[in-house]
Amino acid sequence: MTVLLHAALILLVVLMLLCSWRAWRGPRTADRLLAIDLITTLLAGVMVILALLYEQGMFLDVALALGALSFIGTVAFARFFGEGSVF
Amino acid sequence: MDTLIQIVSAVALIGGLFFFVVGVIGILRLPDVQSRLHASGKVATLGFFGVLVGGGLLHPEFMPRLILLGLFFLLSAPAASHVIALADRSPRAEFPPAEANGRTPEQDAPV
Image (cartoon, rainbow over all chains, first blue to last red; front, side, top):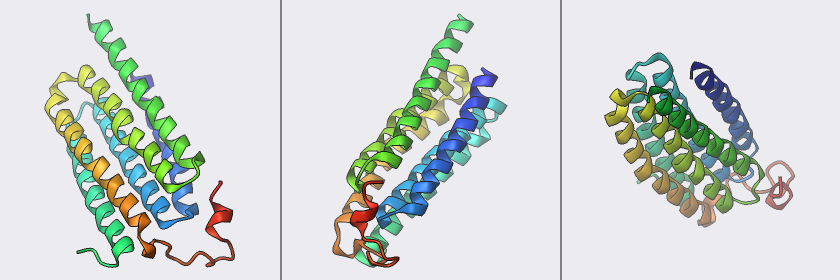
């Protein structure tokens, strides 16, 4: 099981690097925002797998806070570039 | 019984990782914003839920927080996709301008 969790961590980091290629390349702003949103989802997956690996529930709180912050950031930035202002 | 639970949770974890891989391949290969949004929705729901189910079977003491995480992502991921799709349809969305580095969006699109 430990081997599987370590392999999952390596796979998730590789997937985050691939996503950052899309965030760098674009071509539209929505593509970049979408790729960054996906990177934070993958990072929440990394946090869940770390919690399973070290048997520490604290990492799940980190994943929850990361999800909340990334959702607020995505909505704020999408409204900013779509409508010109956040509120 | 213990081995059975471990096998089932490993299957759920591997299923979640499979959908992570599928979603990222979709992000890289699909042609436009809407279809990429569809691919990223697979990651946020199916992939993440697979990992959560696997983790909950492996460590039952984490179950309440895993359910909370699942509910939160179930609510927030479609809302974020919806907001991104709405923002991309607005006329202000092409920023910086298309000819910023001498390439049009159509030249960049099929990558």
